[in-house]
Image 1 (cartoon, rainbow, N blue to C red):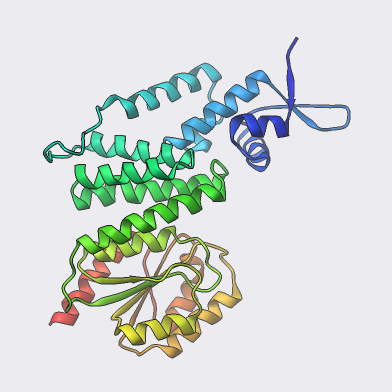
Image 2: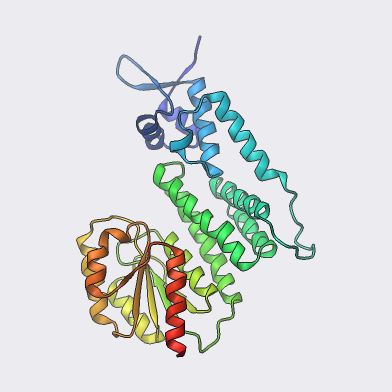
Length: 317
């Protein structure tokens, strides 16, 4: 006779929140629980296995929308292949001589980082990032590990695969890592200064962290001020540091009148020579306001890099 489990037990055993389990069930048809006479969900052992497999798959980068309806045997095979591939490459001892990095190095290090973040293991995440900084060139480090790591954690938080605690832990570790990495870029004292933050009410700093790393790799002196900074404080920091540009990350909400007010106020407080750069997944919803205040909307990090290169050329011409 099948054993049935209430959603609270399933959440505890799988590591998924009850909210995520319901969302995956309703939105993607991942499982089909039974209903008790009192209309409560109960899940079978097979449902529990599927949810565990789905969580493992999303942690190594699979999209829940693409895998939710796979038959359980196929899902199990896919998870095993992904995890075996991630663990196949031998670890590179820190004392070994530097070597030419390959895509497989980046994939393995990304998988290690995602696994550590998924387990809320701060030390292992730090070790994985440190190893990546030794094994990969700086451009490869950003492209193969840091950017996809933060994107996937952000995606997993949004679709419910990870909790906000995972995002906060990853952000804290990556913030510290990028801080030490940015110092290693050794920007010249005469290099242009950029302020990187998120506007008041924008609490998710993943995009801002990536913007800071991108600017540092382009030779800018970066002042990363963390999330949710009022316009007055941003303007004061720009004035005191002599910033040439300000980079803002906007995620959500996508219709915040307070945020529009903050953007207008920031524009009024800044010296007209300071360029405002705005990106992030929610930024496109504020295009009209951005155009109104003369800010530059950047759809991706490639656009940010191009804009920074242009500003650098302007500053030195």
